[in-house]
Structures are given as structure tokens and as C-alpha cells.
Length: 326
Ligand SMILES: Nc1ncnc2c1ncn2[C@@H]1O[C@H](COP(=O)(O)OP(=O)(O)OP(=O)(O)O)[C@@H](O)[C@H]1O
Ligand SMILES: [Mg+2]
Image 1 (tube, rainbow, N blue to C red):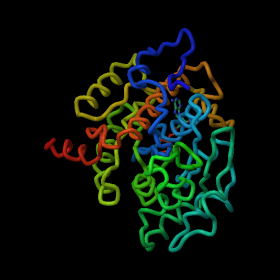
Image 2: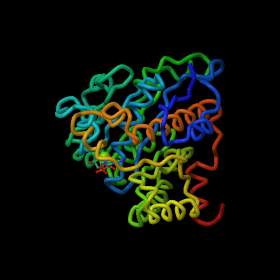
Image 3: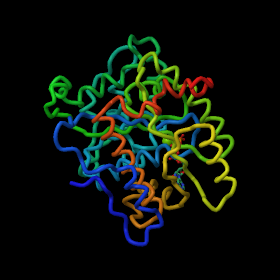
Image 4: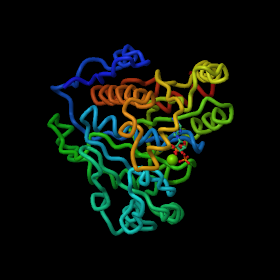
């Protein structure tokens, strides 16, 4: 199977962008199929975290054949709702994470398969209370990571170079617009962080704070990597957006080579329990999310081949850049 996504004819996105990131097909030999985790996060609300998590999940599942688990750790439960799950009150991530002690349900009990290759662990508003009660828990930053190990397969077999038996290839975690314990848990569980950001001055300020705060996670996860910053709601006709993007690049932020524009189809899709990728397959946002899917997939393959790669994207390295001591 090839990792390249075939873009429809007449696409305004250069397939070269995809080709530059997707180096060859899927590795066949020596590649351990272990579950990898991407957390989509930013302090700022309304930047497209949920829309991106959903669309990316659908692209990876439907177009790249990955077995994807979406995990909603946001008490607003927007991702669950966008996936058509409205009331997961008795069987949500809250019942898995618990509070001072473990919840009553294992993760696998709350996961719902919503389409082939795509499953969701839904949120409920109770997660807000869970975040408070987690504060007194031992290993409180590791609770989600520990829960995910129950579906991540046999790591010891994977280390021996055998194919692991993970139930999912990729986990995508959607987070609330805050840096509380739920977000910290999502970051500690992650191999990489994807940071959607609007090209606006207020978003840029939040981005700076968020990137600095990633340092707080390093004691629990010294090898946390930044997959990249994803410009969202981007309109290339606006010089303001162009200059914001330039400013972010000049400041050294790892900006991904794809932007997501604005379209009312994205919001319409969420209202009917779909992602824009399924709802409007020919929409330009869908094409952009397909490019993002290829980029993320290629990044994960690079990580699987050589976990030491892309050191310049590591959070530890970023912290030095921020302090002016690269
Ligand atoms: N590319 C887009 N074009 C137009 N509307 C979008 C786009 N992406 C997201 N939206 C809409 O903007 C709103 C905010 O998006 P979304 O919920 O994904 O942001 P968020 O960062 O997850 O917000 P929160 O921090 O509150 O969880 C939603 O109504 C969503 O449908
Ligand atoms: Mg959201």
C-alpha cells in the first residue's frame, strides 16, 4: 500500500507538498506496528482543535487505512458530539479516569466504533469534576497514559521486533482550551503534539504561552515532541494573515507546510455528526486535511523508524530556543 494520498484533479494544493513529506511507501520490514499517540492542543479556544482532530482521524482511517481511536478529554464533549455521540454520561472517559482512585470501567468498555477503522472514547461534562478530584491521585499526570496501555498491545513483543497486537495504530486526543490536568494527561500520553493556531495576534500570544508551558510537562515526559503548529482559519488573500504566518516562522515556530482555510461546511458537518472530510469531500478544507493526514502519517512513520529523529522539534530543544540559547 502506498502512503501517498491521490488528490482530485483540479486541486489547488500542490501534490508536491505531500510528496515532500511522504518519503516512500509504508515500511514493510523491521517496522513495529505500535500504537502512536498525537495530542491536539492549544491554550486558546476556538482555533479548530476539535475540527482538526475529527478531520484528521477520518483521513487517517478512511484514506490511509489506519485504525484510529479518537479520545475526547474535553468536558465540553464537542468531539463526541461531532461524532454523533450526544449523551455518554454513564459510559465516558470520566468513568475510566475516575478521581482519587480508578474509575469503574476499563477504556475498552467506553470505546464506540463509529465507522470502519474509526472509534471514539467519548467525553462527558463530568470530566470537569474528574479534573478536580484527580488532583489528590498518585501519578495523576499519567492516568490517561496508563488507561491507553490497556489498548496499546504488547510492548515487550514490539521491542523484540515482532509485530505488536495494538488494537489501534493511531490515537488522536482532543483537549480543552486550558492547561489543566486533563490537558497535561493528554500531553504526557502523546508521542507528538499538534498545535492548531489562528494567524491572529491574540492567538499568537496564547501560542507563546502554550509553548512555554509545554516545558512543565518535560519532567513527566522528557521526550515530548512538537509535531508542528497548524495555521487554521487561514486566508491567503489577507496580508494580515500572511504577515502573521511570517512572524511565526521568523520566531522559529515549527509551522507545518499546510494551512487550513475557513469554510462554513466545517461547522455544518459538525452539526450533523460528521467531519468535513465525509460531509464535503470536494471542499478545499477536505483537501487540506488530506495533506495534513499525509504529513502526520509520514511523521509517525519517521518516529517509528528512528525515535531520535526530528530532535529540532523536541519540546526540550524548543525550550532552549525560547530562552535564546539554542
Ligand atoms: N476551518 C474552519 N472553517 C470554518 N469554521 C470552522 C473551521 N474549523 C472549525 N470551525 C468552526 O469553528 C468553531 C470552533 O472550532 P473547534 O470547535 O474545532 O475549535 P476548538 O479549538 O476545538 O474550540 P474549543 O477550544 O472551544 O474546544 C466550531 O463551530 C467549528 O465548527
Ligand atoms: Mg474543541
